[in-house]
Image (cartoon, rainbow, N blue to C red; front, side, top):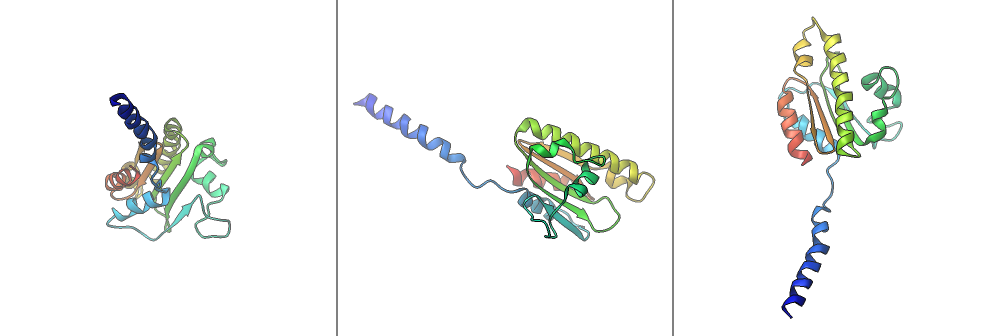
Length: 167
């Protein structure tokens, strides 16, 4: 009888444990909202989301994504991105926040490299301008399958809030 109860307890636990992680996964847009809320100064901008439909203001076409993260062509890293949300400044400054949710943690490191290339291009284009410090202070962080990129006045705050939301 004692073994039977132990068996039932183990069987019940083995069936219930996988359900513990079945909560709703936070979207890239929700993580981006957390990153934006950390910013004391947030210039006017536009948010682009993967789930936006063509014709919506939040829709980012391949040409825009290629201009931002590729060198004229859409980078192959976009094939392993399940969801993204990108906030770009409406003015000619490098203020940019982005969240990419990837297929796997390994893919997240490839996407982080794509973000670092983007930061490098921003650093070159902002050299000897009033925005050089912002570009130089940019942060890219990986948490599990999620990549966070912050090019803003308070990048560490944005990353900390994004990491908190992504967990």
